[in-house]
Length: 587
Image 1 (tube, rainbow, N blue to C red):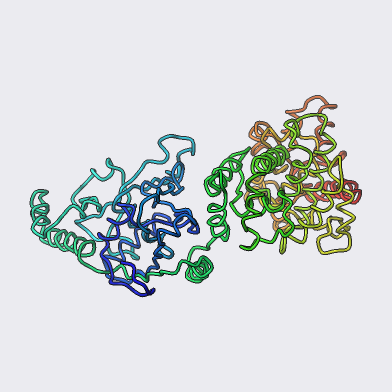
Image 2: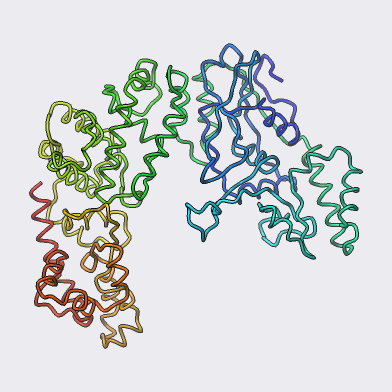
């Protein structure tokens, strides 16, 4: 199939391509992203094939046997599961011949392979993630008796379990799409229709079944619809340029996948892609979960390894740097893991950690101090943890890592490199004073914090300033002090609130002045109750009630009825503002 010159080749049938994938004659280079298509995209691809819509050209790469050892290759995913099987298995390429890799078209070809040879396991919406029945594997089926009722589709393709596919009625007969590859001759299609009684259906249905099944056969066996260009160059730079160009549209390509392809070939004792992919999965399961990606880990490797240039570009992933990273991999991962555990203990998760890059200086500091195993909990590191927490909160609130994170990472690394002991908070603050990365707070900055709203990503960071001593290993909720249900118009009317004040009541109900952090159980017990009544019932002892009010900045000697909400809100904001100035303007 490979010629001396790169060129468009004779188009292939779907059956030929699927056969080559099945035989592992087609592989994926490590520069490819993993499979990311959703069910609807797969169904539309098959519908497009049946309607003879164009599905685009493909780009294949012929890798000579002499060059195979320079790269890492992966097989196509066959039985895809969002819970357990999203990663491509590593391919064994020890044979004597060169191989064909897919540079453009992986998503489409994987979708065809899953639909014709494999399964797709998506989460059932109402089941818990840890429920073993939440991800049933499903095969692709086609209804032979009726077209799709979806206006965007002509043919009714669906992923179904075997039990679901057996539930045929007068309007459905579910045909397992992959079985079309088993037919060899057209007469076998007629035999199938007769053997399953589809020719005995009402005339319109029988005709639809006949036409649909024959159409599926022609599309898979006869139509030469896989148009592809075969690239024969063995120059990595050229191949990468082609790859980036053809992948500039569609699902965004992570640049880290390109870098991983180089890293994988240069590590000598580990597989970089496997190590980094598994490590990302591991740290994302810490605490309530995070959303770190390969880019974060690779950037961390550059910074924590002490490599001079930390820019995220191919040149920095040269042989020397990659060997440095590989040699320090255990220390790097331990430092990152400890740092994520620490940040989780501060109460952060994938929703509230608004910049993953903010973890990197923490990890550098932890690694420089020898990755102490007791760093997250030991009393010995309490002061250090408190300085880190203050810095992290301030950096997130000031969005220090937005834009160009390297302009923050480089100088902080230099400070950490030359300062021993606890986290040098004051040195870092002074370094950035007067710059657009400053983490000092003006009165105007503090006023903007008071306008934080329920559910916004930064609101947890703002609230955490008010609760520095909470043990966030327990789950805390953002709680409306005056419950949300009391701000619905019927409730406001029933409570005698003047209609002219309704909009202001509703708007301020979601602002910081009406929010607190409350543990899960007390929050559930409080849910929907009048705040004044709940406070008196929960804390009948006056001293305990005062302590709760002090801890949550509830103003004393203020009417806590709904009618005085605006007055309460104003007084509580004053208390919060004073506290913010005390904390933030003393950093």
